[in-house]
Structure formats: C-alpha cells, structure tokens
Length: 289
Image (cartoon, rainbow, N blue to C red):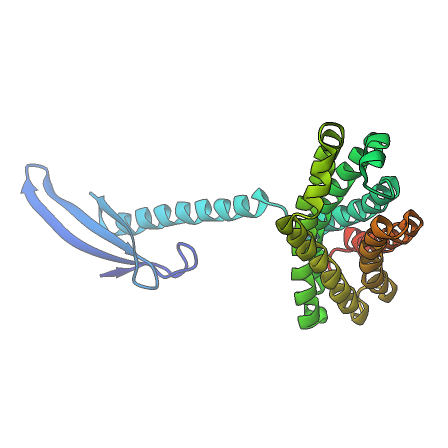
C-alpha cells in the first residue's frame, strides 16, 4: 500500500490501495493498478485504473484529488453567494417594519369611524383603501417581526417569545378577518341585513375574538419584553405595549358607543406603528445589535 502526501484533497490523508496485475507481452511487462482513493475517515472516494508506474499512479491520484478540492471550493463559494446574508435579511426586516408601522397608522386614519350600512356606502372608497392599507401593513409586519425578535431574542427571554408568537398569530388572523372590508360595500348595497347577520354569526365573532385578543395580548407582552432589553429603545417598547390595546379598544368603542372614540384608535395605531418602525429603522441601519 502506497501513502500519498497529507492534505492532497480537502485536507484529508489519502491512501492508495492498489492491486498490481500484469502479463508478459512482446514489448515487455505492462503494469496495471486498480486504485481505491480513501479519505481520512475510511470512506471510499473514487476508484481508478491506471496503466502506469507506481510513481505515475501517485501523480495521477494527486492530480485527481486536487481537481476535486478546487471543485469543492468553487461549490462552497457558490453556496455562499446564492442567498442573502443574515445581515441583509435583518435589514429587510427593518425596512418591512418601518413601512408596515407607518402604513398601519395611515390606514387607521383613513378608515371610517363606524361600519354601518349607511357609512359603508357613503365612504366606500375610503373603506376599501383603508382595508388595502391594513392588509399590506399586516403582511409587512409579519415579514419584519421575526427579524426584530430574532435580533433581540436572547435579551427578550420567555416573555418576548410568547409575545412574539401571540402577536404574529393575532396579526395574521386580523389580516384574514379584514377581508370583510372588501365585500362590505357589495353587501351593504345588495343585502344590508346580511351585514348585521354576519356581525352576530358565532364563528365570525369567535374568529374576531381570537384575532384581536391575540393581537392585543401578544403586542402588550412583546412591547414589555422590548422595553426590558438594552438594545431596543425603551420608549418603543412602551409605545407597542400601549398602542395595540388602544387601537383595538378604540375601534370597538367607536362602533358601539360613539364615533368620537375613533380618535383613540387612531392614536393607538400611531403609537403601535411608531413603536414598531423605530426599532425597525435601527435594524435597517445596524442589523447586528
């Protein structure tokens, strides 16, 4: 058995386990070597046959394994360049939070203070535009929230984890339930009684309860966890913890008590939006805390 120099291919010692075979011909003895190239762990890498001398065998195997090492290095470089880096993903998460937070506040300000048959028909354009804004802002927050939590998860602890999960779930369900805003103008014009029936339909009530309950509980917990970390502005966490319940309860009270309470919903959405956009901006410009 002949032993090749260490580190010929991929930093491993290679061994040539060759079986010599030959026969006498008119031109002399012809030597053949059947070679198994083994890596340092005993794994079989390749099998080659060479009609050459033992020294030529060593040179041929070294050439083959050297080429293999170059190919492996090129593949590693290609893998590194095929996808974005962690810093790039965190930056895009920050951009998503900035855009989603600002759009959330704008959509709330644009939304009619009440959703009755009369107001839906009178403010149809504003209603649909507001729900487009809510849908897009929810999508952006869902894209950005994992990056914000991931960048500060160690410092947020269990409170941050539970808050993140509830906030993510609640935001997703709120986006789903917001689909009603796109069909409400049609129902208000063609079948006004259907709107009232949907609003008291038990599965719809349950979905809204889970969605908005998870939204409020999640962002309150997540905001509290943000306020306890040293890498996120304390004020941004407080804005998130106060803004989410103010937005939801302001919306509910405006529908049931008085449209004047809608200003509470607007202020709450501004607080929540700024509370998310602030650390999002930091993540955008400095992705690694």
